[in-house]
Length: 227
Image (cartoon, rainbow, N blue to C red):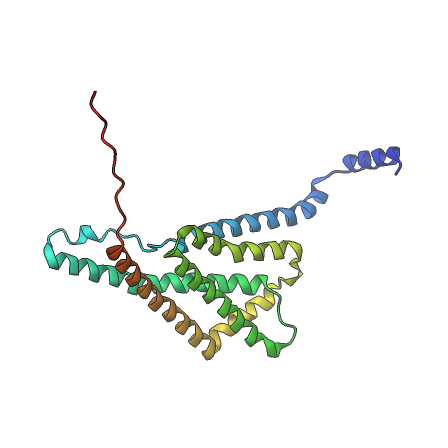
């Protein structure tokens, strides 16, 4: 390599710099960077929210100030159960569909139209398995649940960075449209979400029993000896 020629080439490029030539080069890089940043923010919010054990953190005690005794405990239980019956299914559906959309956009599309339905069903299976595993591990330790929640999304981002040719927006939109008009796919979404909701009630029941049977011991603060 001739150093003189290299320097001359660099000088020629610097002399020919212009906004018209810069924009077509910079804009794709800027769009790619902004997209990656937004994706990372979404994953950050996703894993911190879904990996929480108490995903619906509402102080129900302020709604039962006039209650006491058994009535207060029963009222708190009913309010808590209603919160999970109403809000938790919406949360599950939202995050399940969010993962489905990510997988559809970032995964490799089947070449044959006959395999599209099977591909969508596989995406559904992976998505609901991830949501379910996150909720199960949240009752073991939230740290493990957080690691699991961000593992697949960031792995997808890595695959996309290495090979972005898989991404086809028109093909992805067609697959999403197919989901909205296919009865069997909508049925799977409903059954999958009901499964996670029922599992959540079972997990919370076991967790309540565990807390009663094996309560956490309060750390005793040693008393300072008087001189």
